[in-house]
Image (cartoon, rainbow, N blue to C red; front, side, top):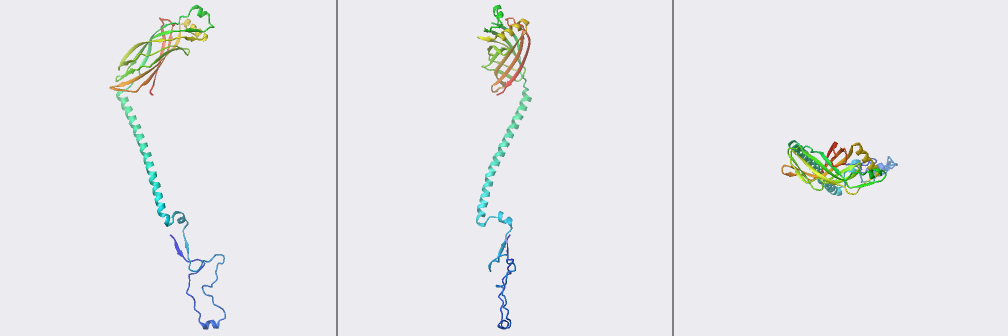
Length: 284
């Protein structure tokens, strides 16, 4: 708030002093009127007569706009506030909807697990028959030369579905391969079928290889493993499946099965010494 004050160095105006003729005639010293009174502080300028000095606090100089700009200032501040409010509301709504969806998904998953109680299926290799890998004496003697073979494997696989309320649809476009020392010997596919709940299905798949080149190192290792009666093989299965719960089908899920198998020989009467299968799922 401003104060209207008189100049500090200039006293308020006084009425002119009248001097009678007698006094003026008797005294030879001239009398000084208010207008001709000297400035007690000559270093500071004296404002002209009839003016006032107004003291304004410093904080009001920066915070209070001029009267002609007050309306414009209020309009601009009002617009900036109205622009910020919709953005904040939109962001709050987005976070709220996301949190609600996550909570709903967690509750649905918990209910599904408690009601359905899903269990992973089990897979194992029951039998295996091999042809096309009978090395002749001449091939065995030429240990430094590579060998081209076309093997065939007949594999019997057991699939166990222990779930009480879940059925499994085995879709087309599956793949089955057998490796020895990282060399693919043959490949094939899993037959398409539906496996109901609490069911064990045994199926056979024929795997064939054509023009498989065995280097001298791989060939000698394979001959040595046969002579010892322990040939390690790796069976891989990649099968697209769909899960059925009641009348609802899921999207396509890829089942991954890796089985480490050890057989005594690569013949039609091969016997399995050991087998260890690992199961995994690719959801997306």
